[in-house]
Image 1: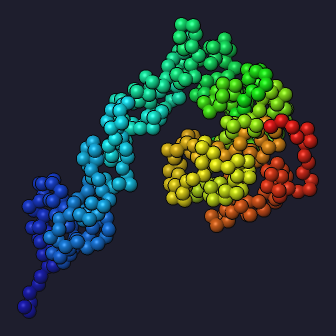
Image 2: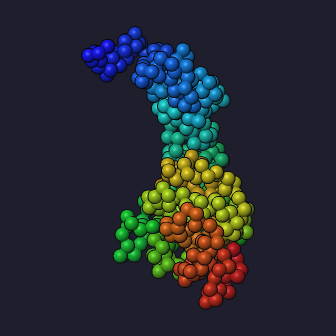
Image 3: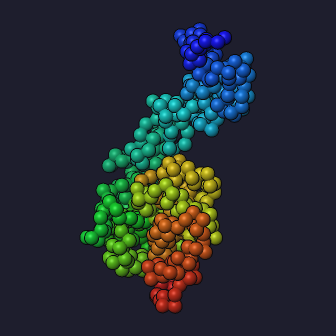
Length: 445
């Protein structure tokens, strides 16, 4: 009609208010869904609404289901991709679902939502199952959580020092009283229990900034084929930057030599000569690492210096160049260092800087990035090549593009830096003619 002035914004507001009014005080799924649909443009509200799961337009006559975050989802998506939490009944996506148990020590599995997994349940790191938080306690033996059943069945305390230990590691006296390894051998502390964590000393040269310096640390596992492991541990403990501790994967005649954090410059200038001599002396004492079924080498790097993309490229070099990795590691996949993670797993690990799985090639569950791929050795040139690979992989992946992280490119880069990584270059067969071989290291591994 001529001269009629209609304010369309006011009309839309009035219609929207009329449509939402019946549902404003109700929190049932149907009313929540109706409120959500009322926020759509008027012409959409009358005909259809869009499913937040599959993005398909759904007829307005179908109410669907409103999720806790306010998104409306069609019935087909609910049936295919959503489940009710076994504890609080909240709907959640199946990809966010976790398995839990109602009672410690009993297998009563339920699927729970992320909120319950964080706030109601806790993971037992011994049996790897989730239980209600009141049934899981911190285990002072390893600093992780353990359920009541596992604490009762798997752990005990030393009668002398009162330290926690695995029941299977306890030494029983004539009265069946349990003693830890240290107290069983006079409590001299030559070999610390496996969860021992000293106050760390960061070894670096005076000009290096502690917070900006890349530190490497290592664990070298070995076993006594001849002689006493305690004599070997005393030799190791004579160096301030090293200590000895038990490891559950080794036999009763084994232990692991562990270093404090070391800068690469400090190691080359001061640690190299000491480690070369130490490895030879350990071989003379009857210790072996390569010629065993259990021993490995783990190298740790400072996690805080890895940005997301850098960490992904570091993982990519290890996981997607398996022939190179196996040559450097001197073994195929190990149950303690699997290479089976997918590309999506690696991306998620790099983004989160965390992974729930410890026994993988690149483990980032703790405060460091840990390379677990290497077979053990006491031949110094081979041991040194493991450290060189860890350092070279960090430097190479720092600047290389994603598509450039390949075995041929890495080998070429090592060849260009052969003076920095001579033992690695030799193992990759890209060494320069000037590299010398220590003939005295030909025996004993």
